[in-house]
Each structure stands twice: as C-alpha cells, then as structure tokens.
Image (tube, rainbow, N blue to C red):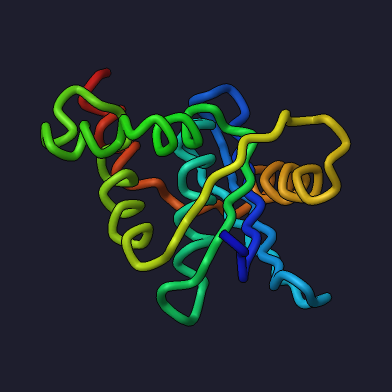
Length: 159
C-alpha cells in the first residue's frame, strides 16, 4: 500500500513507572509538511506512553480512511497489532491485560484508517525516531505534567 502519512512515535518513562511522556512526528508523504506533538505525565509507564503516542498520532489526522504507516521502536505496540494479539484481547474483554483503556481507544481510531506498522530499532540514529525520543524525554521532564488518571487509579489499587 502506498501511504499518505508516516507517523513516527516514541514513549519514555523515568523509573517505569514514573514521570513519562510521548513524542510524535507526523509527515505528509511526498511533501515537506510535518507536525510534532508531545505530552508529559507525572506517573505512568513506558509501554503506556509508546501506545499513547500511536493513538495521539492517529487521532491528529483530520480526514478518515487515510493510508498510514506507523513507525515505532516499541515491540509491545507493533507486535500486539501485527501479530493480531490486540484483536484477541478485545474479544476476551481485555481480561488480565495491561492498558485496556488505551487499547480500546486505539481500536476506535485504528478502525478509521488503513494502518500499517513498521518496527525499527530504537536509538539507532534514525532521525525521526531520535526526534520522537527527544520529544518524549523533554515532555517527561516538564515542571507541569498531566495526570494519567486510569494508570494512577489502577496503580493505587495495587498499593
């Protein structure tokens, strides 16, 4: 499939769990047009930020049914989709799975586009991946961080 959009994503968390953030670079294929997004959270995990980056990237698209290639260094996210695990989890109501709130949100936006995934090795001098990493780390180190309400609520139940 020829892609209209490339979405590069990365997530980070200091301490895992700890302060975290995501970074997203969206490029319109065949043009110089690109946009960047990031946000930091006070208490979250790396996997949540990796998945949230993909969700935010897809949610930022203004049109539906776009042909999108998501490029991520997260085996957690890429394998969950390419190996179709997430669709099995959905059928079972995400019972016993981590991050059900984000996976449900992902499936809603995923279904609105034609999405392919590509895994790349992180910290391997890939310019867009390095930029996403820098955005995620920057986001996680801000003085004012958002609250990952679902994670904090679930985490508090375990304490």
